[in-house]
Image (cartoon, rainbow, N blue to C red; front, side, top):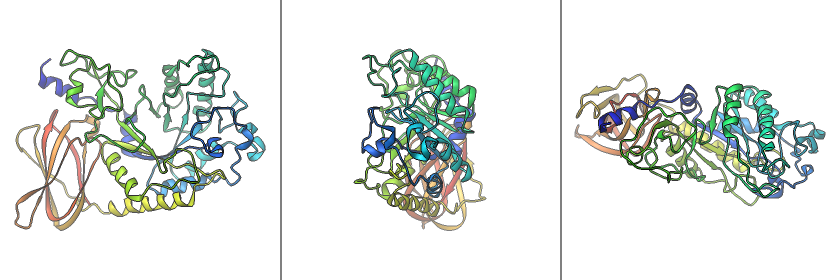
Length: 448
């Protein structure tokens, strides 16, 4: 295979309908971590906690949903079960659950209340079901996979439409001293059976981990990545350009998807990254912690939602079952800032002009505004349904002397790229593609 055809093949790797919907409709959503850890002040429980300690006397899932929506998010992912094995619903398969909580005299179902609140406020609903279970007597045996599938089926069939199922790979010692071998293929088959429209966060799913829990994303964010990173996905290309190995590859590598990697891959898949972090230092509520600054959260939004990734922001309820007033205020501030900064697209209704530029993979796009405007952000999107192609580009603006002046250089575009630039006053913007794997297809250019 020659170099040109290799790059063209890489450019043809396309998202599924589920992936495309996730990137475009739900790029920003909430995690809600709630478990006995909320009452023990821990991050990881050991499964020996008394269910009686879990008693959210003022639980208000409507408050959660309203705050999440106010922040500009479009979905909620609830920790239905964390590593301690405590289940937030009326499961048939363990007593370590709401059945033995004082909340509603053991009749409570927080998964149900959260899913109903999401429906009420127009949010999508998903869940996290921890594969690691430090309470189950089956953990570390073949029987555990049956137990887990039974619980997964309950969640997939009793709570309406599920937009997202979130797995991690946490795997500890079972009571017999053995580590559990998870049947992820079987888990994913159940999801495809009962909730075929759901996306799945996992190496074998449709959305992959960005490699950290600090809200950081690589400078060049690729959704087209080596199959070696996502071994359970079916590759859309075959054969490597160069002999070699990617056995070393892991999510923490900041060059994922770059040419220096994909040229050694046996096949490429479409697997966009999710960037996750908590609004506080911890994932569960700790009274002594404060929410992160508005600046940090907004900048994380720009380098995730605005960098071909999705942003999963965790908000942990207090022991009483409500969000902390400080977190509510910060969420409102974040939503207001997003709405204010991106309220008016100055290029609304204006089509950009495509110029030949320097070749078919290096075109230029000119956006002429109706009048001079002060611009702080440029947003560009590829027609991601046709694949991700652009590797690098430059933004220019018409200065007061009517000459093109460089404003910013950047890398990948993908589903959405938001560039924060030093404010400029101009009536014209030019985007020059400096490198693309095939003829780029730009879907929109916006200015704010």
